[in-house]
Length: 85
Image (tube, rainbow, N blue to C red):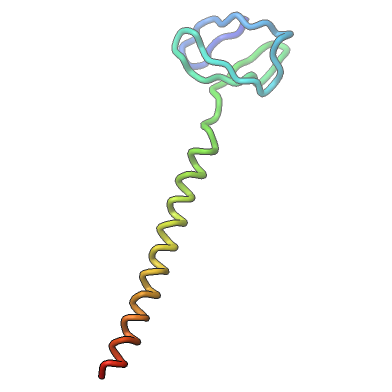
């Protein structure tokens, strides 16, 4: 038996069916939990997915690339203007 760190509900978990690092959800509050210790069985809130953080980082990188492309376009425009004169 383990306790949810979020809502203090008692969760029935078979200690022989889980390993340290396994994730499960609380049937009472729905929190994502991670097995952090086996003897005695202890649960903690599971960390957020790293995928979400990577998506944010990818968006930032794309924005930087767009700025560099805009700068290149400005330089090309300046060169074209010089040809007209």
